[in-house]
Length: 205
Image 1: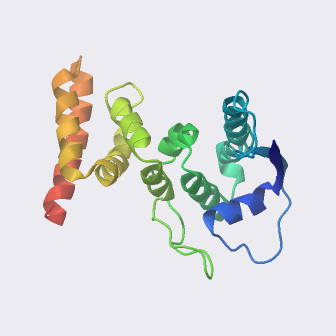
Image 2 (image 1 turned 180 degrees about the horizontal axis):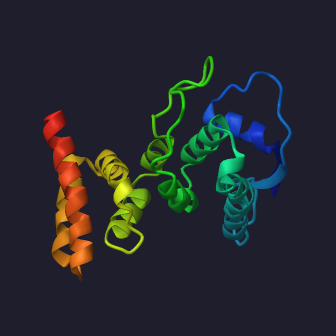
Image 3 (image 1 turned 60 degrees about the vertical axis):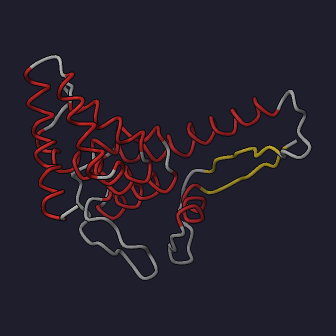
């Protein structure tokens, strides 16, 4: 009814992201996923099998990556960049909040090694753009909340503009500004709107 897929975590991510790690597979955790054989699986079980596969993926592989990213100071800059890049390639909604927390994290180099893709200077912003609308919606909510961080305004603006398009991003932000419930939230939306307007003006979009 399904195929067992055993993968060394690092090796699995290499395959998903297209990265070349250099021939030697590093030590890591092994995770097992059962991929349903959709051509033969019983109709009354296939929904549960699919749900379990996705749950195992999120709980194991994505959860492991997020746990490593949360270690923060114990990671090298390169390791942190690679984890963030992998989360973006996996396009997992679950990683949205930890990526927003790292929205100002700076990669020390834009290209880590031969045949690896070029990174955004701020890799978490690139990962959030790959996640798409869910990430943009999350940022919109944060802007109007107590979790807002004025040091992240540039990052908030860059992601929502990249996901929504500059004019639609501006329209959504202005709509939220009109509905803001207090002065603090209004000021926060105004700060991001100002940055989006700057992006539009500077790129002539």
